[in-house]
Image: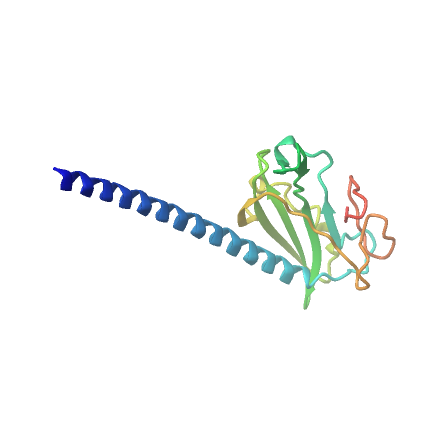
Length: 194
């Protein structure tokens, strides 16, 4: 009877330890998947952004990053150890223009969070021949992934998506930049592309 009781205690201890090992393994696999999808999304975005080119045409948007005007309470995140402090996660919408041979390509990125604060990063592209003005590319982008089937899912679990653009001299590009690149937005945040 004593041997059976000792064996039961040993088996229960081994099962508890096995459960903890399985939980740690699942957690590390989830973290690896999140990091890998983040690296893949950042790589795709950097490859797309490497081709940004000005159109040298009036009224054509070459680069556009929209900062949300009022932070949604769902996208604020409390900071542990900050005594009640929080940060607002920014989910920008991004558009930029590139050219490949005889084709203008407009890329669009956005995060659809449905007000929850955790969203999905989507990518969309539109093209036109260089004989036509790329002026129509930005207005033709659907405002949300549910409005069109042209948006393609890139990554889930996004809590912040912010683009900071610099010129070739390392200076922030902001709404106040005056040159042949049209940059506009309805909201402006100092030091940010708007």
